[in-house]
Length: 355
Length: 207
View 1 (cartoon, rainbow over the protein chains, first blue to last red):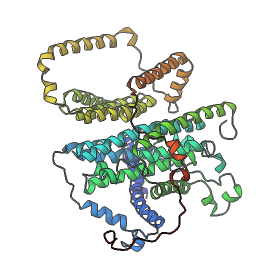
View 2 (cartoon, rainbow over the protein chains, first blue to last red):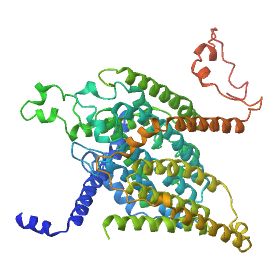
View 3 (cartoon, rainbow over the protein chains, first blue to last red):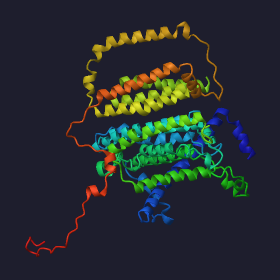
View 4 (tube, rainbow over the protein chains, first blue to last red):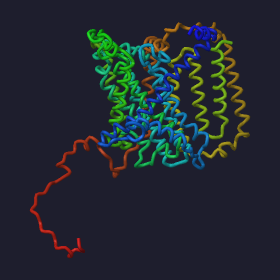
């Protein structure tokens, strides 16, 4: 051990920082990819049980190895380039779809002290990076040289740009309540048990945020960009093998991201609901479970992911004009009124949240 | 050369190369992609100047919204590049004159006395550019800020009014609130009637 430390001290300081940052990135991205794989498994299992089926149960015990088998299959499939497609953009689009979904995790605080970057404008950073996801879809649609793909790209572009406004307004409400754009400070502003979480004063904004999040990730019931019944598979109709898998990865990483941000903004991130009850947190051993910690963050993220899957099993797909109507005529006015009311509440000092 | 300078020259170099590519590449979609790259690099430079709010907003507004719509339009158009390139030599002298004038103006402005300031000192780590911007916008510059907001709202409404077309009178449309309020009685009428004897098999084509 002493040897290792002495070798580590020989490394120049700038290089040390670089190595630590790279290790942190690996520590975030690897579990994230694994979580994505098992989110697909959870999706198939949960929707299976909701529809009184078994879901995947052949590969490995209870089908646990199904995601691995799927990945291996996709890796060995050929990536086919359609005729007259734009070669560079065609291969570039899946990368553009996946990268923003991974980059945004840089500012997510997992637990107290567990983050890659603690920046002043974390909330804006997340909003900016998630707005880039649509480029992957638009470029894929254009480069595929396919009517279905370009139709899907147009739909996805209009949808994401519209819902970003409602999402931005919902985030404005959170930053008014927390008084900060920094995600760590937003979580710390909610400390003091379940009653202090922003879900109570900002319940409407949480609904708007999550609905916009579902629309922004192109998930059911807002998945007109894929719309099997109308445009085959939409923007990824021409993609196969690993290129298709990258779109898939990006979509699920984005779902996890939206869920994580919702957990941080409205459910207090890593804070425990029993934080203020000393009788529970001071118990020997299990007191740790009742205290703050990363496990609460994971439980909250899992809850929102479950909502995603539940929506998919429950709601039929929206028609395109209905999506636009919901975004522009319902969600945006609701958030505007909510923000105004919140401003009044802050001015009047509405205890215990907005004072 | 410190690490900051290396990063600055890296992003500045990418920015210049991307900006040149925007006007020189043949494919308009590539031009739009290079414009996105240019926005990214300038945003990185702004963040290095501790203007993180402006840097992130540049990506949010220009890359996330404006360029999406730009790409939309470019992809929908069938642009014939050869025709667009035809007058290149003919317009080159005019372009060069404009370029020289712009360069001269920029050199004049940048070398003027008012820009000749001491190097600003880096702020402490807890300095929040966002907070400072908000404070200044809502105190010192509150009237210009509000007036700009009103002008923008007027522009938005004007754009909607100018492009809004009345529906043709015979176009069918839906009213979602009426659809939601529909009751069973409006759609279905249950009729009570006695059972009837089926017609004999074979008389109507063997049904």
